[in-house]
Length: 121
Image (tube, rainbow, N blue to C red; front, side, top):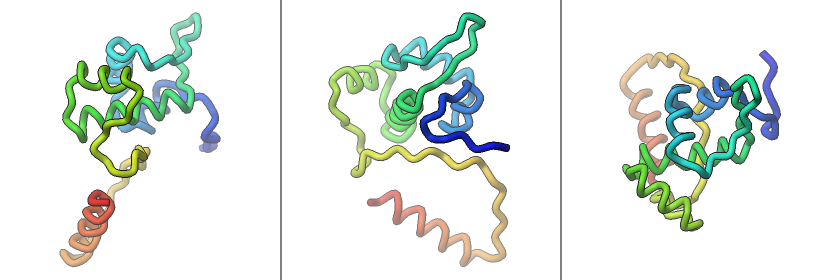
C-alpha cells in the first residue's frame, strides 16, 4: 500500500483510520461542528484536508480525553483559544491497531510505565 504524504487529502475511510473513530462518527461530527470544512464532491464523496484531520483529532481529544460535551467543544473551538488539558497541545494520530504479544508481566509493566510517563508530561 502506498503511503500518502501528510499534505494529501484523505477519504472518509482514511480519515477514520487516522483519527481512530468509525466513519459514522465523522459524519455525525460534520453535523455538530461547523468548523470542519471538508470537501464534498458532487457524488457525495468526502475529502478531508490535513487541517480537517488536525481539527478532528482536537475534537476527539476534547470529547474523549477531556470529557467535554459537544456544546462545550463548540464553545472552545469558537473562542479560538486552546483549552485542552494536555500540556503540549499536540494531538497524536493513533497508530493502526496491532496485536502485540508480551512474553511476561515485566514487559507489560515496562510498556505501561512508558505510556504513563508520556501521558503525564
